[in-house]
Image (cartoon, rainbow, N blue to C red):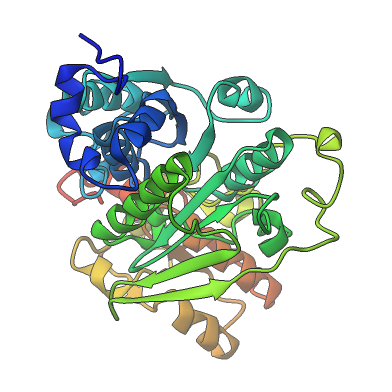
Length: 384
């Protein structure tokens, strides 16, 4: 039964009682939360804590956009999912968990890529957008969409021990493009799959994103407009950086009706195809194995970080980390054949590009990295 004064059922009054005691929330604020809608882009490291706390807070409608399925490598940080959900669509796993946490709300799953063709349609019925994506393509698209539709954009990003969070709203300060006008070059940015991330870091940043969403809905406190929080878990420090609006911004500096939503080809994740450098710069695990059996002479270099060597090693490989090799290559024989490998092929592809530019005549990278070797050649080797 819904109380005509509070607009909440008896069950909801009991559930949100700790909110109702707070002057900045109370019954009126809880009604606002119940009537609000938030679209979460990504049900992963950032989206998991954000979704859990928004659902627990009583946000009436939550949209989840994610095309992926739950994998074991997700569970170190993506707390919305569990071992029993492996293989399921993240939006379905997330929906089930959130409704178990709070059956009084609505969860809308969208198992699809958030892109220019569908972004405006998906976001149309939501009050604000919380970005839990892990790529620049989505961030630029989400920002442009929010400027175009006049919705707040709650930004978050993580890398290893560090995180960033801000609220972009062209009516109250800069947009994301004011601060980062141009996307990075394709392949120039490592993903957390390649560089790693401490599991609790997206938990901290995602929770701050949820707090900002709740504040915006309640109209309470000071949102992170024109401010960015920089978090460092190693130092356990929070720094605030002031952000300035760019009057010549190519998005929020023009008529919003003229904004054209665009998809960007910004690769910062696992490689889905072979190198754009050409087949002559690649070697498959099968071919490398055959070369080894034939006794073919070449220099095999592992450019991974030291911690990765404790997980897996390739016989006969010498270890020269990426940054060290960048400095040492000037002293190497540029005519001798060289094969470079990393975890999955992303770093090695970039290294081959640098070595070709430095004048190396015969340099290749192992397609799919040492993980591909483990899958195709040595099933006893650990995959990570």
